[in-house]
Amino acid sequence: MHGSRRNAWLGLTPEPERELPHAVARLRARLPDGAAASTEAAERRRVERLVLHGNRRSWLGYLREVAELVADVAAGGSGGRAGGAARAAAGGAAGGEGPPGPGTVEAALVAGEVVLAHHQMLIGLPGPDYDRVAADRALLTRAVDRLRRLSLSARASAGHHPEAGLR
Image (cartoon, rainbow, N blue to C red; front, side, top):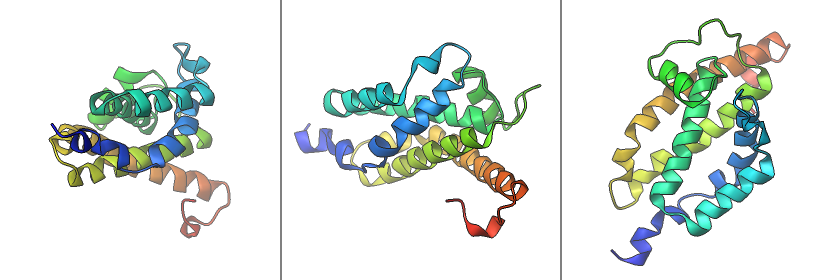
């Protein structure tokens, strides 16, 4: 395979490298399994390692983790990867858990929009990656829609006018 085709994913968009470390660190910090040790600096180093030394598969694996975190927040959960992603995929809410706070919703919304945009742009690259992430695109589409509604609702109850926009 030609080198430029193999590394085409690297030139897709800079937003994941720029936006995800802060948002993902905030999302991981809320998990009960000790992921609070994941700081923004640690996330930044992880993304840098993936970009400099990883491959498409490892990069998409990282983005899959982010999609699961986002889906968990959208489902109202804070229980980690598998439970929240499964609830969100099924369209259900977390049982017995309160809604996520506005900071968590905002971090999940940023991460979800960034990964969703990335996955939508894969259609322009050679190879099967666009099809490989179809399930994640569907999961993120539902999660981002729910997070946008949660964000608007939180802003409206805080006295912000909902037509003022998300950001």
